[in-house]
Image (cartoon, rainbow, N blue to C red; front, side, top):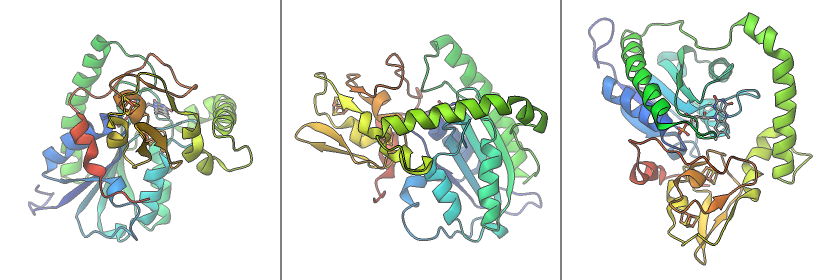
Length: 289
Ligand SMILES: Cc1cc2nc3c(=O)[nH]c(=O)nc-3n(C[C@H](O)[C@H](O)[C@H](O)COP(=O)(O)O)c2cc1C
Ligand code: SF4
Ligand code: SF4
């Protein structure tokens, strides 16, 4: 990739993805920039993340925008980033419709590490927690193709200042709603994880306590293969969750038999990005607990 002054720049695109949306977006961006695609899960559990690349991209799904929006694993990754002062950093979050202050929240973590988030984008993708018709999905993908061009041009010349986040008036207007919704989500997750006295960050990994399989489970192991953080072991032909879950819903959505349930999500949703397959999801193999 060539930068502002015609010099060749190197780019690393780090991604986290449960049902393929963020992977598809990260892949498109990496292609555009001749960048290297790196699963966040493959680097997040080794020491500090040190890189001398010119451009760092971070692509991930929005989880619980009313609370923070940035998945725990992505927060952990951002806290481990070293040498960020010399790189141009951009982020892209994918969401089903509302990203709130996700980009801003990631920017704050990077700032605490001495770095700077130079640009942050929100990309609407088909939600993996509610049913979206195939027709609507096609419209959304078409819009992404257009936005990819804009983001690509913006990043190539290392532009700065674009932050697709909540404006201050919207923040003020929605404050009561967020307060209510945040309280509701935290209460629900605490109930699901049987852990009423733990802080939110520690509750989320335990919510897999509510996952279970029905008689349609054939022990095929797909759920374990697609889990981006190796949180599933197949024991005697059935998945067992290991309680470091990122609530990405990959296992539920990729199970070929719809055999996984969780008592707290819509049973009708069965989604993964159409251009992402199981084999694309397994590249997180170096993740260690
Ligand atoms: C636990 C969970 C929470 C989510 N919260 C939000 C949210 O607050 N706002 C939103 O627009 N989408 C939300 N989504 C939808 C995802 O952000 C969206 O479908 C994303 O593109 C999925 O990306 P992936 O396929 O890379 O995992 C949530 C999804 C999950 C699984
Ligand atoms: S993917 Fe579904 S059928 Fe296969 S082991 Fe997991 S729960 Fe069972
Ligand atoms: S156990 Fe399921 S929901 Fe949890 S991180 Fe793995 S794939 Fe995602």
